[in-house]
Length: 216
Image (cartoon, rainbow, N blue to C red):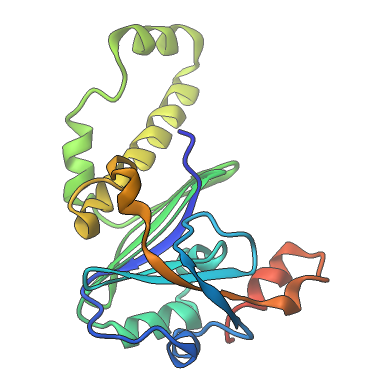
């Protein structure tokens, strides 16, 4: 589980031009254009990468996921739904836990957060999860070791963590035809526009840094 990803994918986003107007229309605040470069699915805090793959829109920002996982619908999430009302919006963060949100046709149908002292499980199981739950996620030796060394609660936590992680990658098939972690090296070279919010650089509080990047 070595992947670190903070990305949002919008399916069949249409013939959009990636420019300053698009960035602002999505609710991003005080971002300045930097350069054309390759897409980076693991951006630094305050960075923003926007790209297209086929007809899908790819957005990488370290804090966008938190706009989709708040208890109430955030202004940013509402903005995305209004701009893309009839498609799929999938936002995820992998690294320090697994977090993903799936919106279909303007409705959030699935939300999972599995991290340190964080757990949210909202919505009905989606096909990718049903498929995974019928699989054996661990080989027999590891499964036996886990059962011997972990308490029942710890085992369940590990199981949920692995299920969420695998589901997160299974969902990327909807956009790339296969899992994002199974693409060939050349397939990761999406041309992207890079933006940055410089106003957060001197702010120490992480929560404030995150909030400063989005219109409220």
